[in-house]
Amino acid sequence: MAGALRGVVALDGPSGTGKTTVARTLATRLNSGYLDTGSMYRIITLAVLRAGVDPADAVAVAALVDRVRIGVGTTPDRPSALLEGEDVGREIRLADVTAAVSAVSSVPRVREVLVAEQRRVIADVIADVGGIVVEGRDIGTVVAPDAELKVYLTASAEIRAARRSAQDSAAGREVTVAAARASVDRRDRLDSTRSTSPLRAAGDAVEVDTSDLSIDQVIVALSELASRRGLLRGAAESAS
Image (cartoon, rainbow, N blue to C red):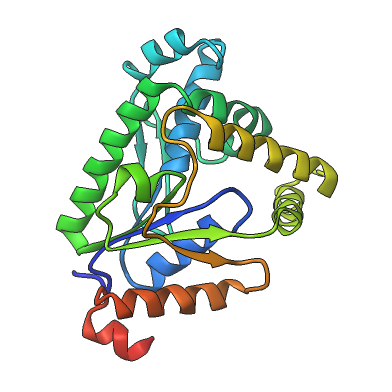
């Protein structure tokens, strides 16, 4: 059955901006597909760690990405992350993967392989349900540069660090706000300075600062943007 959303909403931004929660919630409300591209890089990173490969060894990482089999679910309320058929959704969120994912994702061959797969998934979902919300760090600039709506989420570093600390605590990992801030700053630096697909807002992206907004407020803002772009079918427009 066709969803309310038509086309692609590209949702980019650094960690701690509420990107994943916003993307999943928006996709659920619009009955659309959902793709978390970051989880794909985390799956590859987990494969690298399991294989005993140094994440900084670009040659070895590039060789590995060509032989592993990964998969992701595109239903927002049931996202999945598969490595060789195994559900690794919990493991890819652990600290060792988080620490290594920037190095692995900076390898050009990794990005080449995963961008091609991301574009295939997007095309399949569009053909199936008509629309998809895609989150990541290079969606509007690289993966889906022709997306009908591009959004770049931001938030102050202090807010993002507090959110990350709260997320870790909820997952049973006690991390101070200071440690979370250091991790956020490190990830920002690595993602924004890598030579391949650095983190940046697309020139035609709408920037939304989530520092003082609730998730519902962000969802309303993005739904209104999608409606103004003509991306919502009649039923969604009347309900928004």
